[in-house]
Length: 155
Image 1 (tube, rainbow, N blue to C red):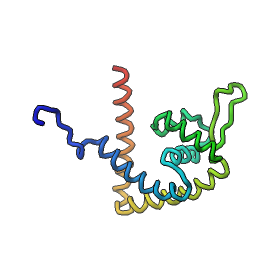
Image 2 (cartoon, one colour):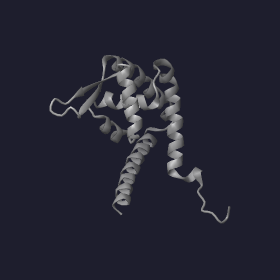
Image 3 (cartoon, rainbow, N blue to C red):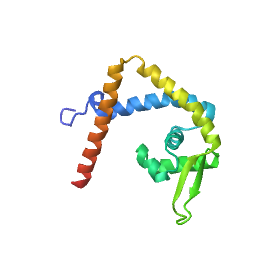
């Protein structure tokens, strides 16, 4: 073991954020998956389209940093279940945009309060200044990660 590089997972940011994200997402997902037969990826697609309709599947994947194949499968399931609608560009049939259907908005309107309530339950233990600091730090980490990623691809 001494001859190998060491990675202390408990102090490794990507691991910590991933574990926390999985636990938080899983707790919320238990609620909506049982009630609406909805997976995490499907809900994320719906959440993005609920906030920003008329995006392509690629734009949804970019905004969520989710795998394009996973988004494509989620979109196919949501289209088949009637929870989202697709509209093709009249000039270019290869281009299409997605939006929530009425049935999709009914689910969205039911899940959003559940998600916000759970978030409040978790963040409610933090003082207002701690919550503000947390989101400032997350914004900063996002910015730094994007910078690191672009310099990594440039090099």
